[in-house]
Image (cartoon, rainbow, N blue to C red):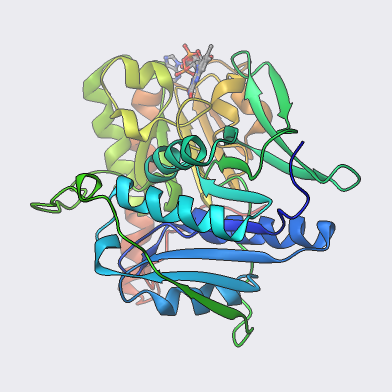
Length: 351
Ligand code: FAD
């Protein structure tokens, strides 16, 4: 049985320089709730060099404490070094729960740390709760192709670890001036074999930052051919958004894999989601159902996507999408000529 002195809910703050992945703030919001329910504290873990100010931001988002390891060996991010330092912190301070984003970095790091400290890990979680009586984290994730949800507990080992999908939980409203305690810690000797030499950092050129996009225009199998992706791009451009797709569109090679929305892709939470030639299978819906406004374009009036859409257009996408793009362009031009765009996407209607 786990020893009882493991307590507090930790969140690994994922960052590149000053840029923090939004999932870290989302998780601090969750950590605050879980810690309150358990009567414990929420803590951020900031590993990097010159990253103390991120600890202050973590306090504003709900952390009571921030473990800060400031060492050049931790910048830029290298999995081996971060894993070794995080595992040491866990062994020294014995948190009850450790949460990371289910991002490329978080998934890699969580597996390494869980193995190093000898505990379990629930990956790709979409719901988190606690059983206060048993002091157990209940981590829920889709299983069996999204047809069922499994709630997983880690009864015999500590800490209880989970990676959580970005975009599933809302980020807390920051509370400026909220105070917390910075706990500085040493990196210790990091195994030089784990510190790969970084030769060059390339920008994610042309890659879409789906999880942060305010407008997403997604295409499905209904696109029919690669050439029709250009219709999506033009619409996305006029709306100031990014292009994404369903799994068949990705598998056909029309849309890049990192832009897949859904159960085995990404979860998005944009203000506007335009689903073009997408039927609305449950595995797709789990990735976009939290969009503020959903517009569906489909030639089948009975397509399930219309059940979740705020606006539905029944028609052939090859006619509807260019017409919509053209209409939006005209409205943008007319707004611009009146000096009223302010760079915001044009609204075509309201609820
Ligand atoms: P379809 O279901 O084939 O729908 C195409 C739609 O286009 C139809 O509604 C049709 O009426 C419409 N259409 C056709 N031609 C036109 C036209 N000219 N104009 C307008 N409309 C047109 N799917 C995902 O998307 N993301 C995932 O992450 C994902 N993960 C999965 C994980 C598992 C374990 C499994 C089993 C499945 C997963 N899937 C996922 C697949 C999912 O079940 C569906 O098969 C998929 O979402 C369907 O994609 P679609 O809507 O593009 O294609």
